[in-house]
Image 1 (tube, rainbow, N blue to C red):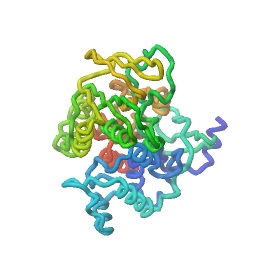
Image 2: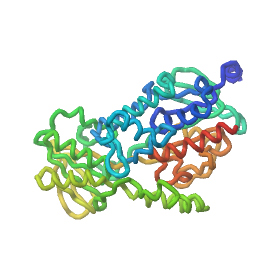
Image 3: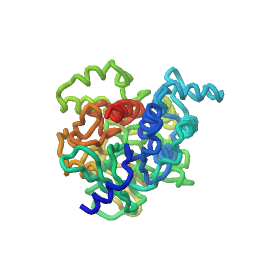
Image 4: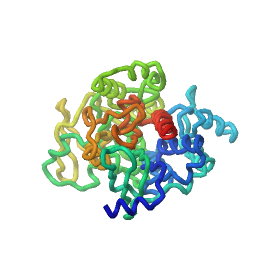
Length: 406
C-alpha cells in the first residue's frame, strides 16, 4: 500500500518500452512523429543504455556484412528514408539487388541518423525491468520495478525484447562426461572476433540457417576445417520467409484464419527451420571445392562423447565424426514460460496460449492489460515475419494507433 502511494506522487510515463532494438526504435519514432510532445513522457529501458547495442553486437559477433531485409524495412516511419539516405551520400551501391538489401555498416549509420533526427539518443535508461505489477483487475496503470530499485508508474508498457532461450538438442543433455566450456557452445555465446586463430582445428557446426553459414565462413577464415551438419537439406532463399508474407498475398488469409492453432502451424511452416541466402550458398560451395568445408545434410547427432581432448560424434545415419569444438547454431525457443516478464504477466493475468505463444488482442495487447508485445511473441497476430524489421513496422503501427486513441 505504501509503495503504491509513493508511486502515485511520481510523474506517470505515457509509455515505457522495454528493449532498444530496431523494433523499439520503430515504435518510438512513429509515436514521436505523431505526438512530438510525448518525447519527455516516453521511457526506454535497456541494460546497454543505448540504441541498437545488442543488434549491432550480434552483427559484429557473426561478421554479417549485409541485412536480409528489403530497404523499405527499417525504423524510420518513411519507408523510402533508407534509399534517400544512401542516395544523398552516394552509397546507393550498398543496397544490393532489386530489393535493396543494405550493407550492415550503411544500415547502422542510417539508424544513428534516425536516432538523431528524432532526438532520442539520450532516452535509453541503462537498467532492466525486474517486476511488473498490474493494478487490481489487470487494466489501467502499471507499477514497474527497475533493477536500480526505482519504482515508476506507467499508463502503457511495451515489451520489445529479443530472442528467447537457446535451443539445446536432446543429445547435449545426455553427454556422459565433463568437457571444457569452450568445447561446446551455443551461437549465443560465440564471438568470432575473440578467435584470432583457429588454425588446425576441426569445428562441427550444427544447424542449417543463416547463423551456421556465417559461423562456418568465420571459422574457415581463421584457419579451421569445418563440418556443417543439418537435419534437412541446405535451403537457399533470399529471405527467411516467402516475400508473400511481407504483404497481403498471404497475410490477408492468415489474418482471417479463426483457428489460433492453425495460425501457429502456418508460422512454423513458413519459417521452416532456417535457410541461407544465395550469396552465402555460393560462398559455402567455394569452400567445399577448396576442401575447407564438408556438409552433411539430412543428418543429426545421436551421441557425443568427450574423450582425450576431442569430440567423438555418432550420427543417426551411422556416420562417425571427430571434432575439436562443437558450435550449436540451433536457434532460440520462444514462449511465455521462457521469458521472466511474460511469466509474471501470465501469473497475474492468465490468457490463452498456443504451444506457449500468447493470443494477443488485435493491437498486440496482452488481453485485460495495457501491456503490448513486439517481436516473435506477436506472431499469432502478425505472421511469420513478426520478429523481422517488417514485423517491427507493423507492430509499431498497431501499438501507436492504440496508444494515440486511448
